[in-house]
Image (tube, rainbow, N blue to C red; front, side, top):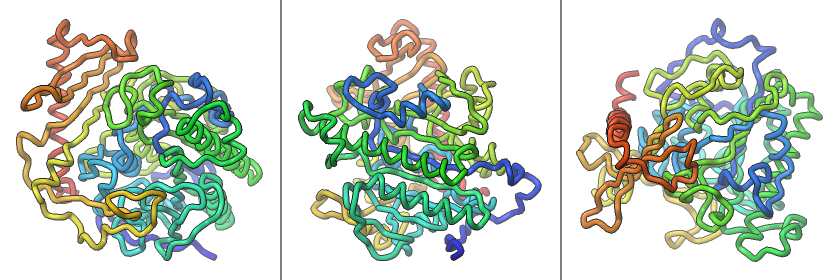
Length: 482
């Protein structure tokens, strides 16, 4: 059976890549794996006092360990958008969890699809409904096949295959989506195609549902920590099954396997992190996540402290496969020089910004998509807003106002980090600037802003210039100037 074709992308003209692509025999299979709410501290190799992650530990020892890897946003949906587009999520209105991507965005799946890759998505999508008629479902965004959920899921997950009716699949959810991913990869191999496979786990996002034998590994701990750690170890085991499947099929050597988290730890995981903050904050604890790349045919075991971020994934994969970058503002850079050991520090800063989405909703703007197309269908494991399914949103933002730059933001240089966060005690809230020397103070305990005002002013100026570019994209200007 041949792979189904995704919906055509009206905003990206198909072109011949034959003279630009890396030669077919050297083009790697690509797998992107991501844990849900999995922070930097929650791995054995980063020194967690209880957690067992033998597979991730082995990957960190045999691959490229990205010690300073960041999610582009301290929350879920925005980071997922950053991976798909190489762009900060505020450029296209994916401001917070449950905010959809826009159909005009160009994704890495669309680019690899046009370059001859078979593209599949398995697990959590959270960039819009996964139903087939959604203009932001995985199929519309470049995937040939998908077995996916609108949001988070637990054991015995209810998923939609290629946007069709929901189906309940019995078992541990991480193992289920890995099994499906391996079947997709095998099908692509049988057709002589390289594969691009996205495996976005539902774990360890709450509500925590640990299973045996993993719960027994943490019998001396109390819930919710016990069940949370059991979910992480189960996910780790499933990643081991994925690697074993690649090995048995002869694909492991030339497969690029990239693992990361989508944001920092939630508050219940804070007790074991050395960093300030948690999920939803732009301090290190909210945005620093595990990052590992395995590619046995190309990468030697190594640990790097060069800063990298999820927006780097698209330009890196384009560089490795010889695909031209989309002609619109990108926020990531290619990490190919880092993979080759030639990047000693990042050539440009990384910016973070939480748009004030509540203020956006209160202004009652025009919906970007028909609300009926934004209604999700796959049920979650708990009620939110009185129902088990999700309703997504995205709004038109044709004009920029002075207040649009509000919200927590940060700029990360190679050594210093600027954080601008509103002071909740001030009436009205006033932005507070902080500067941290991450080399000397990775826990962000000593604010240097008053001692180095020129540095603070310079970094804030760079941040505001970047925000200006992002807001221009938010108006839709990028779609008019392709």
